[in-house]
Structures are given as structure tokens and as C-alpha cells.
Amino acid sequence: MNSLYALPVFLEKMPPLASAFVTTSLVASIFVSVCTVALAIASLVVRDFYVPYWKPTPERELKMTRVFSVVIGIVPLVFVFFVPEILKLSFFTRALRLSITIVAMMGFYLPLFASNRGATAGLIGAAVSTTVWYLLGNPFGIDNMYIAAATPLVVMAIERLVLGRTPIERDAPTAAQANTLVERTSA
Image (cartoon, rainbow, N blue to C red; front, side, top):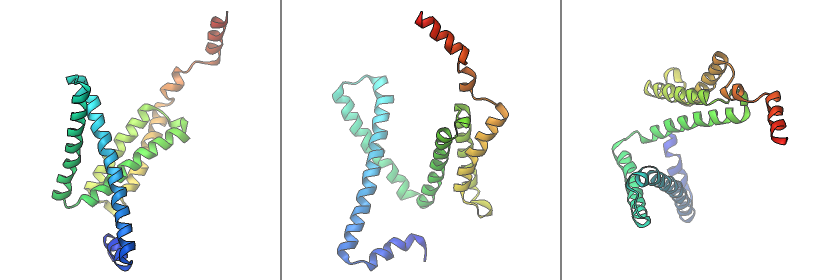
């Protein structure tokens, strides 16, 4: 059976009341997450672009936030209705989010690799390589998720090996400099 039909078949086997409860819960959880993201995007657009350029009153800012919220909510519907491969595209964006997670985890758990330059290069490299891999149709049967996971690791490791120490390590004061600062401020 195609995995796309698993949920409808599962719901068909359930009693009607339980099926209605499960379906309503799923739809509600999707609406909550989508509405949260849409409101966050609308407020960012208003705060970062609209307010600095037009300097509106608070009432006008609220009205424009509502207008942007409606527009941001309707625009994705165009893609849903006119792009038949939207489900495949959601798997592609999941791969891109994975690369962001990999970079963040490397920054937290492997501080040796934590540099802005390496993180930026890793994210750009992952975006480009994952996109190319996706457009090629996942050659050799390797899913683009694996490419999105491996690319930041490889790029950040190469950046660390080739360019050496991170800028944070070079600019950090030595123990002697720190003691000099303490002596000057305590006197």
C-alpha cells in the first residue's frame, strides 16, 4: 500500500466518533502551528520593513499587521492548488531544516568547530548541495536528507582544517592580558 493512503485507511477502520476526534485533533494541531508561523512572519515583516519606512501610528501598525497576516495566509494556498508536487517539496524543506539543526548541534556540542564563517559556509553548502541533489532526483537512491546531514559536517570540518583556528580563539585575551586588566582595574 502507498504510504500516502495509510491515514485514510486507518481512519476508515476506526469507529466514526474516534475517527472524527483523531481528524479534528490533527487539523487543529496543523492550524495552530501554521497560524503561529504566519503571525510570526507578519509581525517580522511589519516590524522590520513597514514600521522603519512608513513610521505608522500604533493603530495603523495593527491594521497593517492584520492585512499582512491575511496575505501571508493566502499566498501559500496558491502553491497548494497549483503545484501538484507540494508533498515532495515539504520533504525537501525538511532536509534543509535538518542541515540547520546539524550546524546548531555542532556549535553546541563541538565548540572546536564553532565559527561564524564555518557555520555560514556549511549552511550555504548544504542548501546548494541539497537543492542540486533534489533537482537531480536523488541519484543512486540516496535521499537528499543524507546530503543535507553530511554537507554541513564536511564543510565545517574542511573549514576548520584549512583555515585553522576560529576568529574567537585568535581574539580571545591570553591569561597574561587578563591579569593586566585585573591589575589596572583593581588599583
